[in-house]
Image (cartoon, rainbow over all chains, first blue to last red; front, side):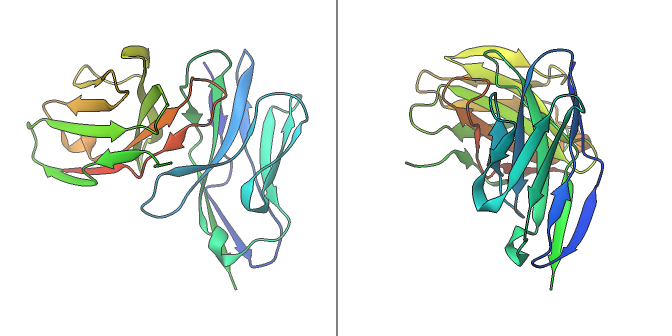
Length: 114
Length: 113
């Protein structure tokens, strides 16, 4: 079975500073990797996904992530954060194939302050 | 294009009752998945339906069930509610399956008293 570990439950950062949210996964088979964001009282919105190809993936709102197969990691980065980036971020994996089941990490709360 | 809609948005029930939640996927999407989100357990997969068939199921008791209609709309039902069923229930739709973006609805907040 696959699993996802988000090492940091909370990440405080000042506005305009860079940030990295860490994600490691475990799976014996190939997986697809995703990052979702959840704002208060809302559903999840996809930031970016890795299916295959280039290991550097660019997403919405200036976020990017790099797939590292040897370290089984998929860390999310943004060079300069804004107050509006304050939210919960979830890393997720799904098995390749036809099923849509996503296995989520426990989430990282990004708190951006002035 | 309209997003995923879920009804109702908020629900309060008492222990022992049953509840039905509804999800309308994005037009053209045939896959609908349900997730439970709680502070303690996080986001957990309940089940996925594709073309009216349950294609995948998570580790939840049989009190949790679902179905999908021919228009891809889906419902989930929880019988004999327990306090621990209090959660945000999220529905997601996608075109086909793995690799396709899943679009999430705003969720139904269920409170069991």
